[in-house]
Length: 79
Image (cartoon, rainbow, N blue to C red):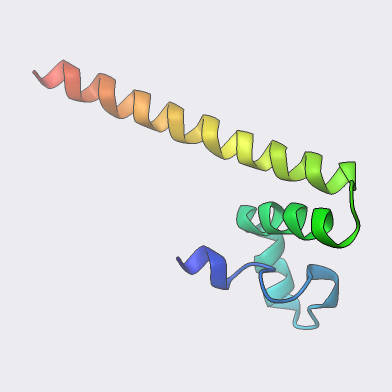
């Protein structure tokens, strides 16, 4: 839930004037997911933004599956 507040959900990253907030929004992967949808709605088929959103989403999915697999293997070792 905190990731939504420290993202570019309300304002685009290039319009954020506060340096620490722009840095935090750039480091937050949720910003790239939001910006891909924003670019699709506002600009149309901006393949750079959409591709970056899919890449970040795919990376987060792979990370989640890797962590879940690791947890499952550890759990099965204990039983």
